[in-house]
Amino acid sequence: MPNITDNLNQLHQRIQQITKNVNQNPDDITLLAVSKGQSAEAIQSAYELGQRHFGENYLQEALEKQQQLSGLSDICWHFIGPIQSNKTRKVAKSFDWVHTVDRIKVAERLNAVRNDHSTPLNICLQVNINGEESKSGVSTSGVEELAHAVAKLPNLTLRGLMAIPQNNQSEEKQRASFAAVAQLLSELKNSSPQLATLDTLSMGMSADLEAAIAEGATIIRVGTAIFGPRRSPENLGHRNP
Ligand SMILES: *Cc1c(COP(=O)(O)O)cnc(C)c1O
Image (cartoon, rainbow, N blue to C red; front, side, top):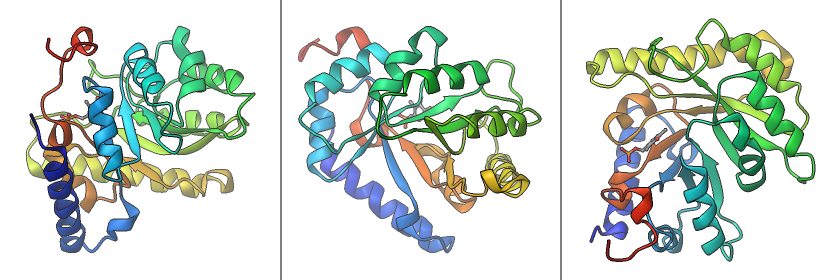
């Protein structure tokens, strides 16, 4: 049984150390606990230790756990999986953030169904920073047009960019990928007053935290380093699969 207390403590210490090394403020970094494949009990344990931001990839699995945890009213849910257009209604109604918007059609649908909420849905555009064919995300050349279009939608608040760089890159290349995402954000902010308030870089996971934070990550997404190995979604309902 993974020890969530120890894992979270170690992670916070690691973040402290990294931010100190690279002269960043640890308060500027939000730890997003990626809880896909983890039980509602595990999420509750992390919550009791002060963790508030949780990331989920699969809608059905997330909805079930949200239901079980509906008493935790200040929990903040982030959708970080690929979005299918036919699932936008439930995503817009059940999450506070979506990190994976990469086309205007999805943004328009999220906007249309968020109309009865008192708060806008926070949006990051997923950028395919290394131009990988297998990966979702808007291309680096398409991001500006998409950002301007999304920023016009009243029930969404465009917050920034999200990226999952190619894995197995050298440390140097990894760092260059994160720097390229940060550079894109900076260009967007300078491109119009409407985008000047963008403040989020969702990048960095367990293996590449250092590089991501050094390049200005504001949300880091960490799963197994907090919760241990994931269970497959079909086993989640059972305590002893
Ligand atoms: C699963 C996932 C993570 C976390 O991965 P771990 O290896 O469990 O730390 C981060 N970001 C995204 C987009 C994910 O899908």
